[in-house]
Length: 213
Ligand code: CTP
Image 1 (tube, rainbow, N blue to C red):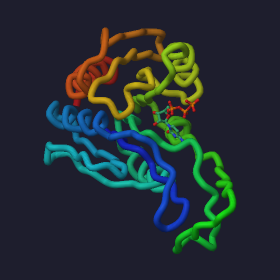
Image 2: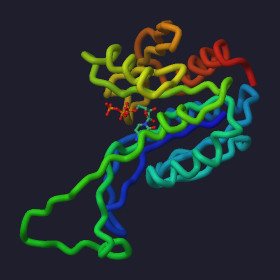
Image 3: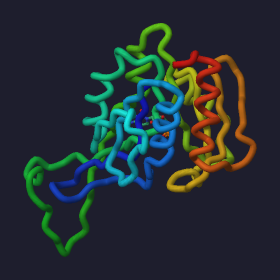
């Protein structure tokens, strides 16, 4: 089982980045729970301070979307389940090569940062996935658009299961989720539950659909 967790940090220069508030806690809890259930787990973990407790989890670190793309290319061929819990940046700064190894100096004028879109890593994995590989994505959405937008992501990214959760989930110790299956099924946590408890809930759901370790 391959699990990704945490934010990406997209460099502006050698010392600054554009990032997000993802804590990585959910993906780490999923990795610990999967190892406990007997899965061989590889966790691709972003720049966060949390780490798995279970020594059986193999952890590899990434910082940028490009790092994660390379790790996914290496690890996806042999996996049976992917849980893409990482909060991958949608845009990254177009870094001026002049500042790659250095530091942008303070100016007294306004500064405009140009951003370019990043590749959709989950859609890339799904495009090259093989039969039998089970793909799970997350959809972080404003409450009003939760279901419609998550269903659209299920199709657009070509995954088997999308976990829809409201924006407040990011950086919070609890999660309220609806799992939308490619087969039209809809399974709810029924209110917000701690992330460690959610990990057990999601693993049981995945095992009932994709099979056990
Ligand atoms: N994702 C990804 N590559 C990206 C952005 C997101 O693989 N460049 C993955 C996330 O890990 C998550 C899923 O896609 O599993 C949905 O992420 P989300 O941020 O909710 O959706 P976006 O694709 O960014 O779409 P939108 O901006 O419309 O919300």
